[in-house]
Image (cartoon, rainbow, N blue to C red; front, side):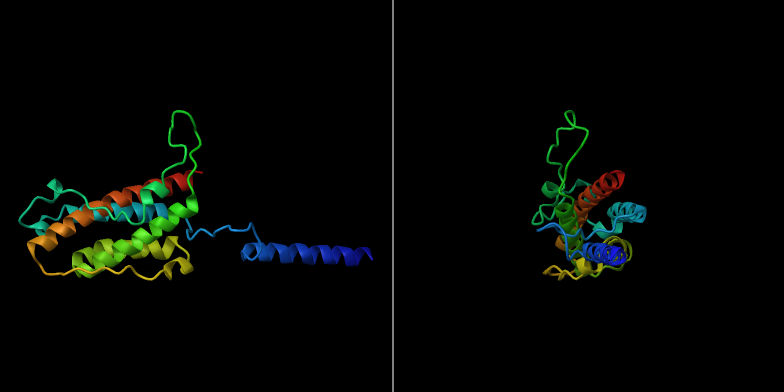
Length: 193
């Protein structure tokens, strides 16, 4: 009788553990984070930031104007900054900063998809090689497979090699540069916990 109870208990614990691991059983309304954050992700995010910064230094992409003098154009629909801002952001009063990690990571993921499709639409080999490839590396190595299934953003642009296109590219790259700084800060924060 005792062995039957022990067997039942062991089987129950194993089944519960497997269900919990598969997220079939768990807190109601809990979301699974799309992030698989490791030290490699920090390196990949830093590499993305460096590559975006390097592209902004390529004067031949922005002939006819000084890109450093232009304003950044940040994609605001996703509200990544507000989702990734700590709820108690007054650092002087609290050593613990609370962010909704899942919401923040979801917004970052959506931003990465948006910018990836935007830069792919420019069809510039230098941007594809340095920026789009780094975004792909980050998505493939730091986000779950299901997170990659998000439908790509619809980006419509009239891509001619015109002054306006180069000016727009400059502004979007500067906005993405700011976003990569946010991504790096979030990854550093999450990894430091």
